Image (cartoon, rainbow over all chains, first blue to last red; front, side):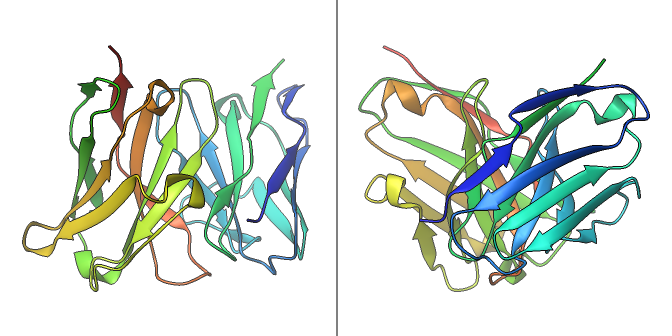
Length: 106
Length: 120
């Protein structure tokens, strides 16, 4: 099974800050990596697919990069509505999610 | 518009089975896989498996092999997830999610979730 490890597990930042979340796969997954945002009581929402492609309707302050085993999700200017938990997901072999990164606004 | 509407909350006793439904609308049901993902309260997302509504083929995460069955009724565009031998630790929100076929896929639409509580 492919394991996905996210870091950090949580972070707190100011509005306007640039933040980066890292996701590492236990083996190479090419670019088969997606990112989701989940707010309390809601289903997850797709943000980024295939490592770097922005889903329709997602603000351009979100971006993704990486390939192989190391990936990042960046929010260029954190907004209050970005307070949520973020998950990476590999689809190279079966499907696996990372453990999540909780983002809070200071 | 694409919608996945799930059945309501369930309370089951340990050892029982639960069947959660996911009714699709707004797209061709047989053109996308249906995946099932669960989330215990305060915990992360856990992928359980996928089902191809066109062929009926399904694949399950090793953790759930032997306990989960994913099926569909194409005449009513509905997918089902059946989990047997329920344990207290199966208490969770269960989501269905749509994805295209193949590795380069992603879960672009999700159901609202169905809460399953296992309690004696």
